[in-house]
Length: 219
Image (cartoon, rainbow, N blue to C red; front, side, top):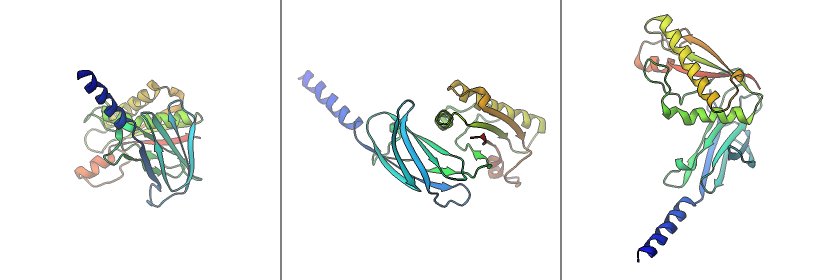
């Protein structure tokens, strides 16, 4: 009886993990929020070949198994957008949503998934998946050279804010390099609190001003 129970359990586990997963998303302009018609490519990550292509402002495809996938969206006049798809992120409806927001060339891309320990340059592990998307983008296009730009709020000592913003971008660079990105492809620049997005002295404004942005220098 025990042997039969064991075999049944194995069968149940296989059935759940092998279920098809629907991946869907949309491509939008970072400022206007409007859809952007883009060339969309997805492939198994990190070593797989091209699996599928689309040309639209939305996409839907099906994946099977436990492999990760990398999505790239490119549109004329925009920086490329990328996303990683991990089957572990599937929801109750067996769906994963990955929306890609494109910025115009010359504009910075805010790494809004980044979290640091308060007042320090230490990256919270929750940020690693988002940084892995940058790694995937850099490996996908080996011509890319980026600049990481660090910002703090404008409260407190200006010199310490400058040092903190430098420390944070250097730690982001170290993470990218540790994942196989050549260090000469990642530049850094610190601004401290000199370039706030919002000038209001409120908790919300200060939080918005603390950020790391990515600028594509060469593509």
